[in-house]
Amino acid sequence: MVLLSPISSCNVRRKHLNESLRKPRSSPMALKIVNMAKEGSDTGNGIIEKVAIAGGLISTPVIGWSLYTLKTTGCGLPPGPGGSIGALEGVSYLVVVAIVAWSLYTKTKTGSGLPNGPFGLLGAVEGLSYLALVAIVVVFGLQYLDQGYIPGPLPADKCFG
Image (cartoon, rainbow, N blue to C red; front, side, top):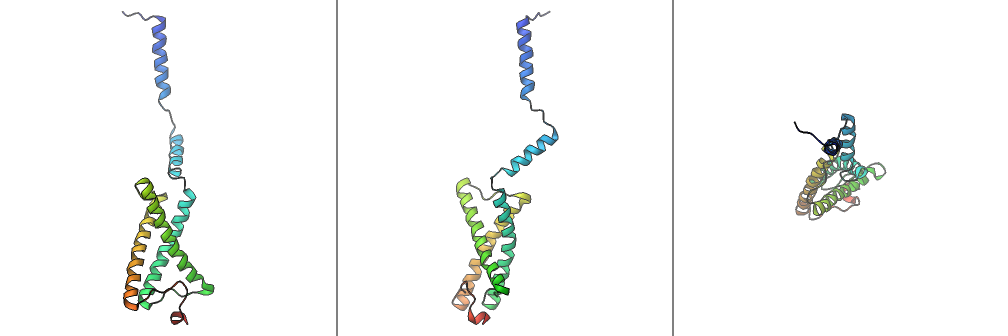
């Protein structure tokens, strides 16, 4: 029979207590809250990511429409009521360039592109923006080869005059 001295049994109890305190005892709700906080703080750009997602999801189809119109008619989109369609077209090009620039900046700083974002939408917008940029280069190049010019940002008289 092994007899433990009061000091050694106290050390055993303290060791057991310390080990049990180190083990996290989290409820499923606490784990869910912690995971949600981690997801939201990956980049610290929650609002910026959401604006980029919304802008990208609107801009890429507008650019597709613009490039299709440019290729088939030789002109960009019509100005629309109060110039709203032309303005949307111009802002769409700027949004796509901004998303690609942000992606390239992030790639140089972290070694990877933009995070996936909520539901993977930021990653999808990033990919669509790169595809739109390639389409812009191709269609503008074809426009230059076919017509000898690329239309400027203002409506041309020959297109809508």
